[in-house]
Amino acid sequence: MSKSKLIFNQITKLIEQGLYNYKDLSNEFISILKSKRDELIYKLKLTGSEETEVLTQRIENLEKKLVKIEKVIKRKKTKKGVK
Image (cartoon, rainbow, N blue to C red; front, side, top):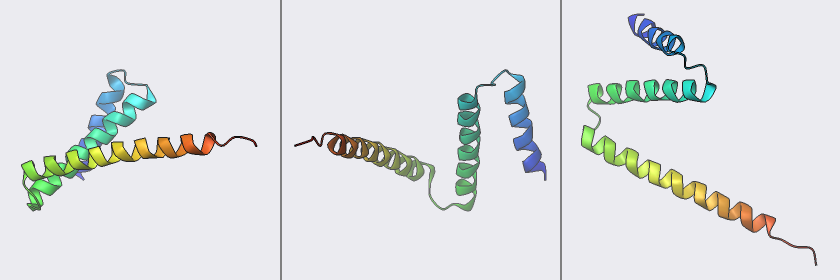
C-alpha cells in the first residue's frame, strides 16, 4: 500500500507543479512507470544495469526503424496514380 501511496504522491506533486498539459503529464507518468520497472528488474537481478541500458537502446533503435519503414509504406500506398 505504501508503494501505491508513493505513486499517487508523485502524481499529485506533478499536478501541483502546474503540469496540466496532457502530453507532459503522460510523459511524466510513463517515466515514473519505467523507473519502477527498472527498479524491479534490478531487484530481481535479471540483468545488470549495463545490459539493460544496451537492450533499451537496441529497442529504441528498432522502434525508430519501424516508424521509418511504416512511413515508407504509407508513401508507396499514396503514390499510386490513376491510369
